Image 1 (cartoon, rainbow, N blue to C red):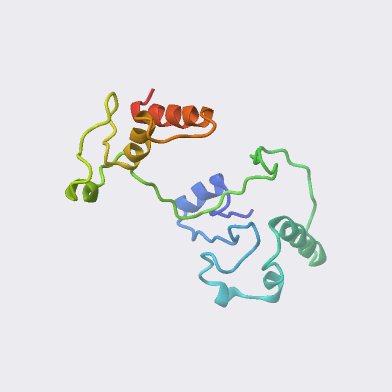
Image 2: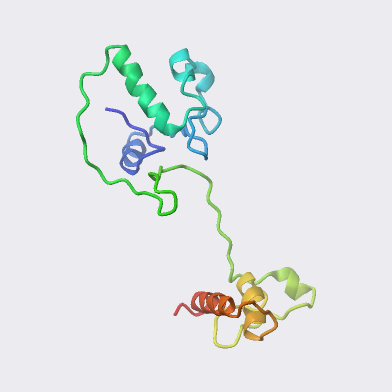
Length: 169
């Protein structure tokens, strides 16, 4: 049995329970890489694994199966049905991939705008959005008709999205 905590939700859970290292063997483009969190690569480096570096993940999977076959380690291959999410744009399987995540507090007032006297810390009428927040900086000019979109229908989409975000409805 193989467990790859960085690449599968079930394996992630097993890895967490058993305190396994989480090794990202893929680059953001889906190729096999030793540059993304593979901390002990220099200690374990060997020609069999080194051949996989730079390969596309699909090619690497086929190469691994072929390596197992050549080494006499492959007993059998059986069909196995499982659910794999696919991208609606590219139609390729979605690979779980560990990466840093960051978020922006878009409704948080920006103190430097208020402190500089450029913008008061008031709410946009009918919302809980401060005028001096990122959402406020986008929504207020739209509501005041100071921002124009051509064609106008695009403004309706943006206005609707920002209002829904601002009011939660």
